[in-house]
Each structure stands twice: as C-alpha cells, then as structure tokens.
Image (cartoon, rainbow, N blue to C red; front, side):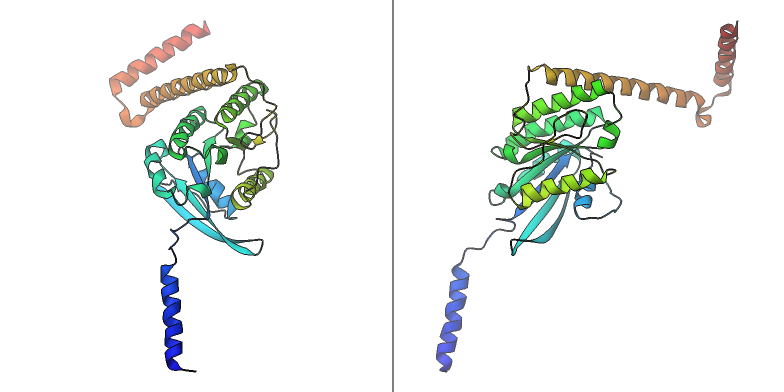
Length: 286
C-alpha cells in the first residue's frame, strides 16, 4: 500500500470528523428535573429510582447524577437534576433546561401531602414552570409524597385536597401522582412513571383518581373530572386554616418552653408563676 494513500485517507477522516457539528452536552437525551420545597421528598424519589437506601441531605442549590440504559438495544442516557432551596433557586432552571436540551425534560413538582404549606408551595412552582418552560406543560407532574401520612386524614379532608389538586392539574394540563417511601407498591409505581414518560416517551398507563386511593393520572388524562371551580377554593381555604392552626400551636408551645425553661429562670418571676398556678388549681378543685 502506498504510504501517501494511507496519509491521505487518515487526513480525509480527520477533516470529515471535524466538520461534523458537535452535539451540546445532554442534547437528545432524557432529563428529569425534581423541584419543590425543603423536605418534599425530591432526593428520596431519586434514590428510590437508583435502588439506594442512602440517608438524604438537604440539597443547597443543584444536584446532578445520570445513568446509562439500554432501550431497544440502543444506549440511552438519563440525566437527573434536583433543584434545592425552594422557589428561590428557580433562576437556575434556564442553565440546565437550555434550548438544546429542553425538549427532553420531564419535571416533577414534589410536595409533602401531609403538610399544607408544602402543597401551596407546589402551586407556586407550577406558575414558575409555565413561565420558564412554556410549551412543556405536558411533561410536568405534581408529585405528592408521604402518602402514608396523608392516608390517615379523614375521608372528607382527603376528598377536598384530592379534588382541589385534580382541578389544578387539569387546568394546567399536568399529571398528578401520589407516592410514599414507606410503601413498596407506590415506589415501584413511581419508577414506572419515569420509565414510561422519560425513557420510553410514552404516556402513563395507570390511572386512579378516587380520593380513597393513591392518585395517578397523566397530563390531560383526567377526562372524568367534573369541576365547578369551587374545588380549588375549598382546598385553599382548608390548607390556609390548617396553616393558621399550626402557627398558633407552635407559638403556644414556644411560650410554654420559655416559661418552663430552667435556662431562662428568674427566681421572683418563677415563684409568682407557681403561686398563681397553685391558686388556679385550687379554684378548679372547689
């Protein structure tokens, strides 16, 4: 073989390779973004997908990890992003959901079903995502965690919250799924949501919208929902009332701690407090 031909062939391959456009990192891949308030279960959901039982720690700003999968014999990269710090960090979204990668994003807005303030914060996230991601509503899910705690609520309370969340999900054309790190069936179900939506680019196959069961419904799939517009107002009134009660109880407990804390003791004041308490008890006894 002529050495000159070998050199020319190699040089031709180099030129051909260099003229190919360089694909931006993550372009064409699947991306999963988890957002939500503190202790809303974001890290736990990611750990469960990877089959890890690690203890979770607060995410200060942005956490990232990825995995390689084989789908129909082809290698596929799945990127996981977790935004910490609540809505204060929403300005970081454009740095990861860029023009080159945004088409591959699915977003889970996580919230604790047992905490009223967490539910309300998730609604704020929906408004932010609609502004930041614009045409990606069909790839957004409200993900309610701690269903094991929510399950202990009264049927009436559960119905009000579920109907309110269904109405909001339908209005914003997003999905809704309840899960729990304490319930294996729900852990596996959430994994399947990621597999169908993020990996297979398919719709959620399962559907359950009864308030006495853990809800799961894909974006735009809640066709049985009949809403009067009052459902959201009822839910917000209930959540606001619960938050007010929690604040009142917390304030009351703080006052009790100040009164009984030996580190804050003042002999004269404590003596007067004990005397008045004894006087009150004696009156009750009569």
